[in-house]
Amino acid sequence: MTKEEQGIYSFLGLCMKAGKVTSGETGTLQNIQSGKAKLVIVSLDASDNTRKEMLNKCKSHNVTVQVFGQKDLLGLSIGKSERSSLAITDQGLAKALLKKLQTIEQNGGETNVKD
Image (cartoon, rainbow, N blue to C red; front, side):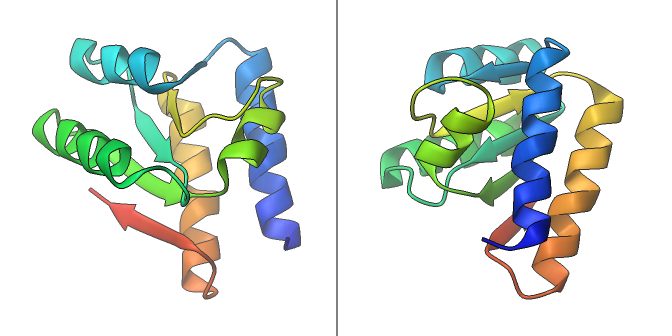
């Protein structure tokens, strides 16, 4: 894991402590549909169905989505068990996290930006 990836996992922990993360499919979908989700993260190892559903919901509700990380590490970063999806509900935190994720992508890391 690169230093940048570690920084993202740490930042997700900070977002969780601030109470601005919803995790799991149900919670993430609810936040997308209600307009509370500002950024959605789907793990690289999420099932094809989960990934497709999240990408489609985000597209239809105009929510930025990133494919990043592993389920176990996403969960661990927020003090939970495995999580295949997370929703960031604060605009400022989402913007900062998206910037970090885009930096990794530009450096050849494993992320996929979807608007």
